[in-house]
Image (tube, rainbow, N blue to C red; front, top):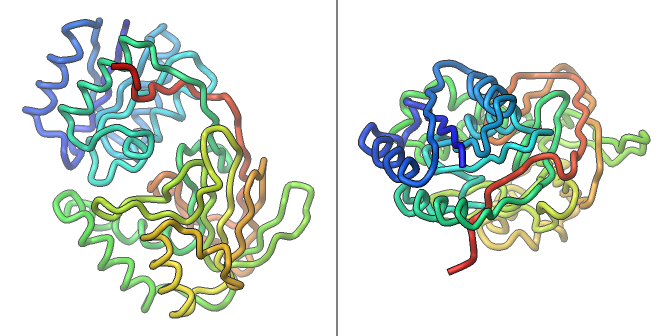
Length: 309
């Protein structure tokens, strides 16, 4: 097979030694080309060119942000996407069963390529940006924006930085009571008002260390989007949500302060008082006053871990 390996040279776990090891392993059985990313959005362009030139699989050895960019260049094409863990958390790779060890992940990828373990999956679309696992509107986007200001620290102390920034944002930099937006279906049926929303294409929402953080299990490649919306973010609601997320997320459905709706083909966020922050797949995209979200089925080819022996 013809492969393109996209590498983010600044990714937290992608050392030169590991990169050489990956290239050697992949190049033994396949025709391999390698490209580095140098700026924001570069992976989208590299993936789009690869698809146009007939590359079979684009492999991304980087974090979720670079993986998302590559996916945006491949949606609608026949070229498949394959993640290798190169970032600090690697949410999507771990979600589909890729080991967090680069060597083990590469070995499994080679096995999957040889077995032609590729399937079509659906993705979400937020305005003009596709997402693989989730869209965050409000609080988590604010946290990510703060973290990205200190990206050089994140490279080495990712989980500590996220925990500290989350606490600081919660107590100092976010309105937890007044609704920031309203959410409606595409036919303008009002769903409700909220301070924080997550639109899930897969689950879990994220990982903290080895623990998955689950807000809903009503999301996956074989069904459309699931909405989790917090009407407010008071102490009790937040503590309950955190405890539930570290568990299996099932108790969130019983909270009156939380709205959960599954199998949505689309929805719309409209600002109440000024722009709200949003992020896709852990990548902060800025602030906006209106956001159109939709589900795009069978739009991306994905290499999934082979279950054959």
